[in-house]
Image (tube, rainbow, N blue to C red; front, side, top):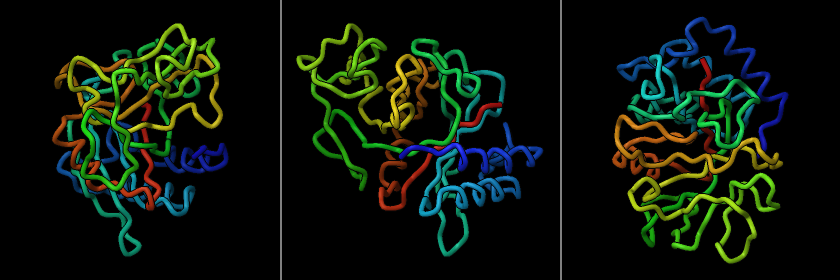
Length: 236
């Protein structure tokens, strides 16, 4: 789903009116303050039909000081379904809005819909559409390729650079596509942005969001494509 400028501006205006929004929208104990409720209400108004929201919030000074939490709209009220858990972002932090570029090690801030889930096994416990990755599955990150920011088989593209979707570790054992730079694709503005399993709890990513295997399994079990889930990556 493409995020329209008008909808994004509506959320931004509301967020600017919340003094504690950046770096503190979600209380550390998991309780929702007024700022969080107002933020979720703004998202609800800007994206009608979306009733599941994942928030990634900076609580410190480094890429390892992120918290991920999840909320669902039930009976016209937003409820926390995953209290804040540790998360990691790009090694160089968040890019300024609109300035994410290929290979810069930064995470793109904004609000994005979620695509399919992926992983190493034949199936997962999730309602999300799922694709088991094979060793010839790649994600193209060559800005000069017409296949930029797309999942391809290694033999069906002439791209000179790409991301292997089956790694030597468990980072892509479970993952979810964050639909950044997809509708439309702008060459060079970043590719292969996922929510996936972290390498460990200290190592930042190249631009993705990473959490523990335990917590991504909780998210996968909860997520429902019929509820049009969104993820909001906050830029301090």
